[in-house]
Structures are given as C-alpha cells and as structure tokens.
Image 1 (spheres, one colour):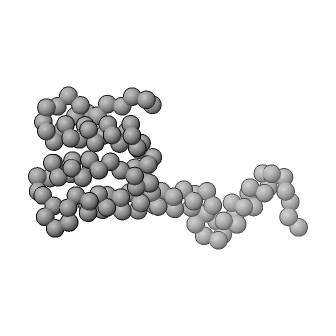
Image 2 (cartoon, one colour):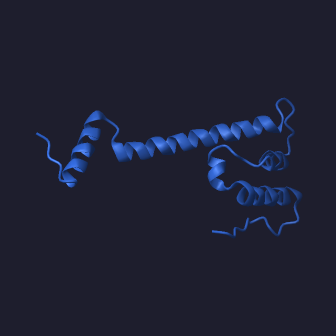
Image 3 (cartoon, one colour):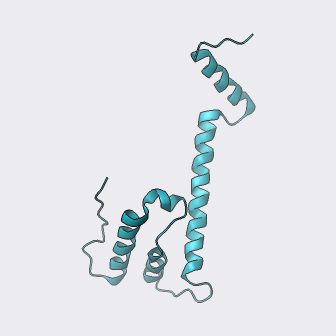
Length: 111
C-alpha cells in the first residue's frame, strides 16, 4: 500500500494537525514495521502531549516515548511467543507431536 489517509487529515484542530503529521512521518519515513521494532517518530510524544493537555513535568516527552517503545516491544514479544507456540507447540508433548507429524508428512520413518 503506497497511500494512507489519517482520519484527522482535514481537521483544523491543532492537536489533529500534529497527529496527522506524526502519522504521515511514521508511514512515509519509518514505516509501521519499524514502529513495532521501536523506531518511532518523535512527533508521537508531541501528539500525546497535545491530546493529553498536561505537560510532562517530571520526565518529558522522551520518557513517554520510551514507555511507548517498551509497550511495543512487549506486544511484539507476545506475538512472537504466541506464533512460536502455535508453530512448535507449548509443551514437550506438543513439540514431539508436531515433529512426528512433520516427519510423517515428509515420508521419514523412525525406527
């Protein structure tokens, strides 16, 4: 997909305009796959500040961005663990069954 349109694209609200800019930069400069790997536009922190309306007095916007990256990593790890458990089994019994089934489908017989 080469075109994407953020729903706030036509809004004149300042927070919506910042959101549109962050979306555009993430989509065109970094990509969504990179966002899941922790490479995010710095504009997302500005968006959070604009929508929240509360300044970040103690930690600043970089702290907020680090929390976002942390949550993205946890989400990605959860997806990876789930996909691995489906592909390879959660328990040793599941893993053995999947391995035996795979070998049987390939025509390999064990003694």
